[in-house]
Image 1 (cartoon, rainbow, N blue to C red):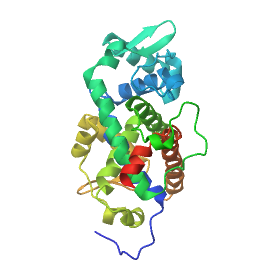
Image 2 (image 1 turned 180 degrees about the vertical axis):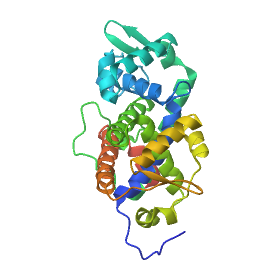
Image 3 (image 1 turned 30 degrees about the vertical axis):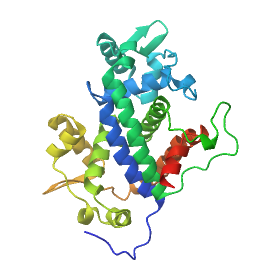
Length: 304
């Protein structure tokens, strides 16, 4: 169902939010070729901490040294119980994904050299380009500051964003999304299911339809059966159903004869308006950090 073209324009914050949902759901599966979402988030948090001190290095061809991170810090970053983090990180270390030492945990050398891991890096980098185009279409990206950090290339060099740096900043953004939403939804699994449900419901809508959908979800949303939702998030059907019921009880969605539909009740709407603003700020931070390194010039030049 389409709405009148005379409807007021949708604020960029909501158009960016729609693009952000699609981006997070596209890059998330690339992080868990094995294991589950919680393992993937723990891995991402470890890798982000390991490379935090070298994120601005201009040399993308050399893997920088990894800084070990205490398991307690990883657990605190994700809001995960320490014992859960310790048990899961220990299991990943036993599989050769992570390495444990007296200083903390790091991503293993074997995983960093794994062809599948490197292919996922390239795929996320490509998806970031498409996300940047979506954000540019919705609103102007952060302006280039007058001064660049030491070592940053001049704007005229128009380099492609390095794959390692781009991936590091992608995970900073994804973790920021989780940090903002999980306290509201109840955890990372609930957040993933809610985002997937939203994408299924409104992914087909044009930006000008979003305002009408927010006012009347049942008329504009495309319901999705719980079994199809489980396939989207790669979780067992019973697990998906259980968390979907919890989201319904909290006022995030409702069941219809044709499937599940996101529906924020009145008490939730101001909260999600605030979260949409937070997301826009995080998106601008993501691309702002790339821009400060002069690493968006090639993309800007390609699109004009």
